[in-house]
Image 1 (tube, helix red, strand yellow):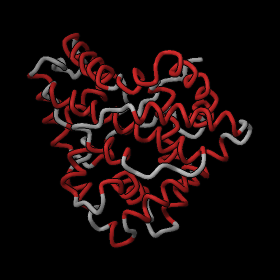
Image 2: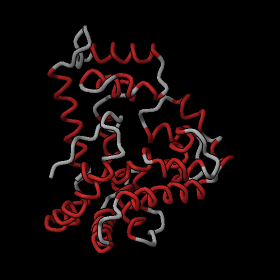
Image 3: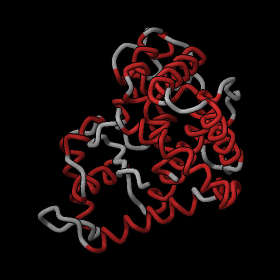
Image 4: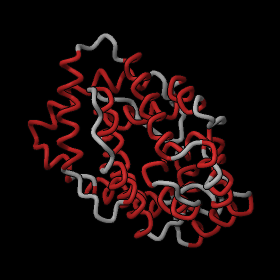
Length: 274
């Protein structure tokens, strides 16, 4: 289900209409819009809590955006802009789908989002507390965003439990399957990358020449399995029949959203199954 829900949320990072909506309120530059839009459910927070919950960004990078962005746009403005941009993007991408199709998908996705357990999940809880949208596309995107951040919170918890820090996490993904340049833009210095790789060698996750070991691969699989288990409750709440129906409804929506998400994006979305 992640592969069907994540693309719906992710258009807020890649669609030109989403970028235009944040720039229209004064948030010029990609990272101002990113940090303001994603952090806005938390209120006018400083950098420290955002660094913690976003996890993979270096503190100085977050500090360059927060709290300064709130002088350009208050959190409420940022929330309206991100929803406006997402709805406009989805309207462009799904215009051929009947409204009844989108309304049913939104209803089922909301049932799953309401079934999410938000205890200990800061971003999931903050998004779940936002007002329900007035129209199917707004409801669809907001529910997808709640579920996406709910899963992300659980993923961060699994990484912490595995003893991985943010730059170690990125360094291992680069060693495993991701071009380095796709993850370098998160503010970590060359020395911090090198030190993270050295720590991964010491714990047996990388060989001396930087290749993933079987222990490292198994460790990552354990993290992903823990993430999946922690993300299961919304789909248990929806039930197998409701989940399968939602999956069917989301297939054309997710495929349309995939067209604007670069295949080499840091999200690492796999191709969508039928």
